[in-house]
Length: 182
Image (cartoon, rainbow, N blue to C red; front, side, top):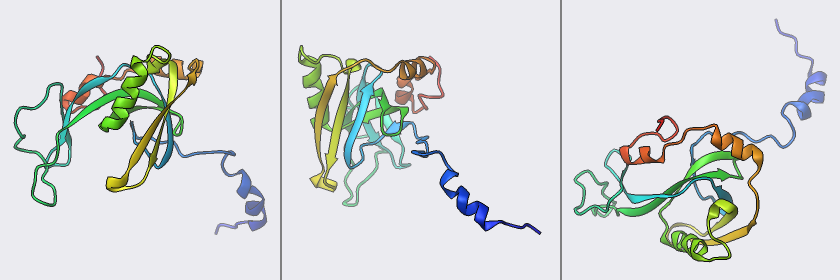
């Protein structure tokens, strides 16, 4: 027989988890949620083309595809889904406080980041944080991209990133970049 002293439990309920505790995001990929999404690029970008196959898996290629793949997913109207140009790079996701891979297929976000890279006052996003704000849903989804002031990356994040092996090239082979060593 287990005896529970409810008065002790009531006094402990505020001490059960540390203040400000968040459940860690164990997913390796950053997805843009509604509202602000702030990240710091930790690696250079790889680019390519991506489609989703009939097994609901992404298929990526360094080069543009010349033909519609036989295994491309078909949409509700019976048409092949789009092959999209993508960027993928390693980021520090401030919201989840973790190193993740960010894949960007939205051309508006790509164009905004490229404009920052090409601007002599901003340059490489390895030197500053970027905030992407997502609003709307479905076809009405909009993104705004804002650079944050140039700043040093924290030594803790640098150390964590340097201690990991992440092979972005594994994406082209359908492998997990966090489980493949270069």
